[in-house]
Length: 66
Image (tube, rainbow, N blue to C red; front, side, top):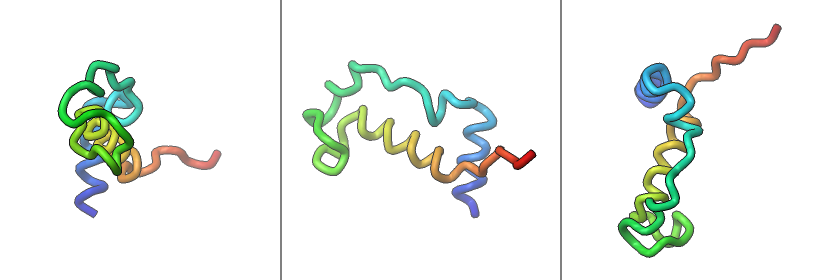
């Protein structure tokens, strides 16, 4: 429940940039050597991707059937 509230608040503040924004290429060179997130979880690119994915998965759907 709290996860949905936090994700929804972040989405309300930042809009689609928080979950769907382009991650800059240079972030792949910060932290661990880049690899998939299960191999190099502390690479900056992967950290940002996981955060975006978390917001996307926990944000309440705003789409309604017409």
